[in-house]
Length: 212
Length: 212
Image 1 (cartoon, rainbow over the protein chains, first blue to last red):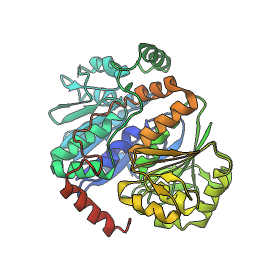
Image 2 (image 1 turned 90 degrees about the vertical axis):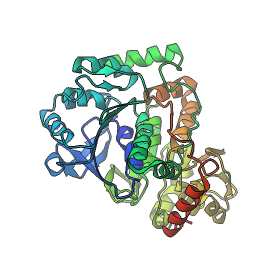
Image 3 (image 1 turned 60 degrees about the vertical axis):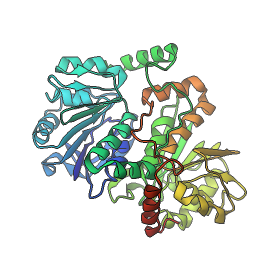
Image 4 (image 1 turned 90 degrees about the horizontal axis):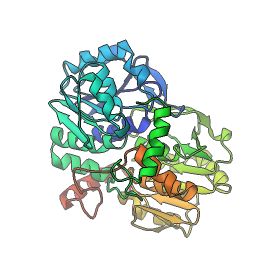
């Protein structure tokens, strides 16, 4: 199974690397990190961290495509070469997936018309302008499109996808390999659980970044 | 606060990127991805994925050092340049940390003598030969050394460290930003919870990789 993970400038690294570590553990998996131009991409925190080994024209028929998010997805949402590539590969994929605001990029490519989808909690409403039906879940499957909520949700989504593709035992083995037995120190990982003051402060700072 | 994250050939990407996404969210955080030689490093699955912007000699006094693990940590455990660098920076760090088999590298550097520490469940016993006292916990703090269990445990460890450094509200805000409200599809993320057959099969495959 060939898995294409899109990289781009100012992306959120964990959106890609969480699912990579899970999906890459499936037997026979080949992961292709692909970008408009191959080479090193900056993260949304400004680090020259992630390297794309492939350009878009080199990856034409992945079984699974995964689009990570970003605190600044706007430039990629307007990148016609990327959007065209997404439409082209989506026509042939078995699964088209996103993490965090990656769903806004799928939406900008026109792939979410009438589709139930999710995104980072801050960006959920933004899905509507692409004709998607926002759903506040950890991840949402609608046909062959699976969209995950913010950043770390990609790990849960990828484990579920591994189970669908390879069976529960394989997914459970991957989960044990990455020792994914989460013990977060706080219960503030969703907008419904975090203290209101923290939600509002974060919302204000992200609005300042023009995420909405 | 300057955070040095060691990169090296055949490392596990998520070991580094989970904590990066958390610790990099602390106010004023500067993350330095550092390797013996700067440039792109292969992951343990063979992908030329992660880029080190700095060489060892450029990073001399980080406040926090983080050593990720690998399915094949042996070469780095014998890399005298890396081990010497770890000893040098550890003498000045506020926190010296590891994820997964990164603790074996700390051990090889001689930093775990008489220290309570943890590692990936498969590698826990391996800590003993470095004079460490293995503890089966999600992460273990002993003085200024914090070691985390396998791969994904680095996220929990980093959130706790962010809370110690910057207070609970900052850590909770980071947790909300990365929407870390884990909902794993299975409860098989620890060796005590996974089905015995899966534990034994994975153990056999990892022993074949010579992790133990």
